[in-house]
View 1 (tube, helix red, strand yellow):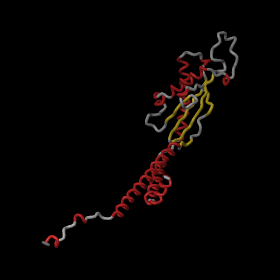
View 2 (cartoon, rainbow, N blue to C red):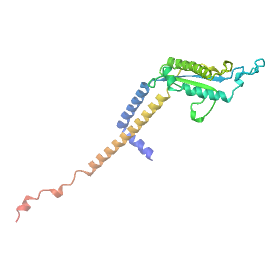
View 3 (cartoon, rainbow, N blue to C red):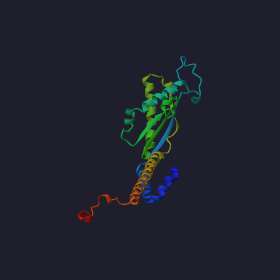
Length: 239
C-alpha cells in the first residue's frame, strides 16, 4: 500500500519529481565523467631453488642430483617471498621508485593473495601497478619487478649465502597490458544517483504535504469574526 501511495504522489507531483530526477542524472553523469580512469597492470614472479640445490655439497666431487625447480618448493621460499613483499611495500623503496604519497601512480605487492590477514604463504611475488596513464602503470610494474630481483640478491649477499645456492626470481607472467578500472567511478556515480532519487522523493512528498495544507485551509474558509463585530448603533441609542 505504501509503495502505491508513493507512486501516486510521484505521479501527482511529477512537476517536482521530474526536474529533480533530471538534475540527479546530470549530477551522476558529471561525477562519472570528472573522475579520472585508473589503469592497472600486474606481473607474477615466482621464487625457485636453483637446479644445483639449496645448499653447497661438502664433497664437490659428489654433487647433488639435478632437480626440476618447479618441483622443488619448500617453506623457505614462502618465507623469502613474504620478506620481499614487506621490503617492496615499504615507503623507502616506494620513494626510490618514484612513488610519492600524493602521487596518482601507486603499486601493491603481495605473495599470491591481496588480503595479508589470511596468512596465505606461497612462493609468489605479485605486483600490481595503477596509474592514470596506462604507460606509467606498466612501467612501474617493470621497475618494481627489477627492484625485487635486486633486493633478493642483495639480501642473500648480506647473509653470505653461497652464490650457487642463490634463490632465483623468475618472471612467470610479464606485465600485462593496462586495463581501465572503472569500478570506483561507477560506485560513486551510483551513490550520487541514489542520493538524488531520495532527494526527489523527499521533495515530492514535501510538495504534497504543502499542497494538502493549503487545500485544507481553503476548505475551512475565512475565520468567523461575528463574535467581534461592532454593536448595532440603533440598539445603543434605544432607551
